[in-house]
Length: 143
Image (cartoon, rainbow, N blue to C red; front, side):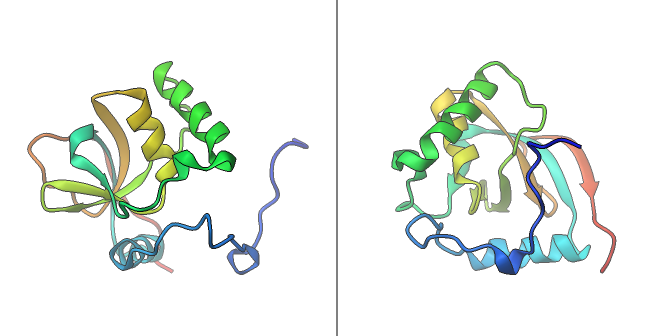
C-alpha cells in the first residue's frame, strides 16, 4: 500500500476557505453535474491558448502563496511536456472561447509556460475550427 496516496473523503467533508475558493460558475456546475450523471460527454481537446479564458477576471490564485508551488510544479511539467497524471483544466465552450471555471492553477500554469496550445477536458461537444479533438466522447455510466 502506498503510504503517500491520499485517502478519499466525502465531498460533504471538504471545506474550502472562502478566500481561496473560486467564484461559482452556474454554467460550469450544470455541465459538470450532467457529465457526472452520465448525461453529457467529455472530450480531450487541444485549444489555442488565446481561446481559453477564465470565468472570473478577479480571481488570481497565481498570486497567492499557497498556490505558487503547485502552479510552478504544473508549469515545469508543461515545459517538459510531462503530461502523465496532469490535471487538464475542465472547460466548456461559449461561442469561440473555452471557459475555465474551476481549474485555475492548471490554467495559470499553461499561461505562465507561454505555450501556444492548452490541453483541456471539454464538457460537451466542442465545435471550433481551430481546436484538435484528441479523445472522446467519454461518458460516465448513468447514475
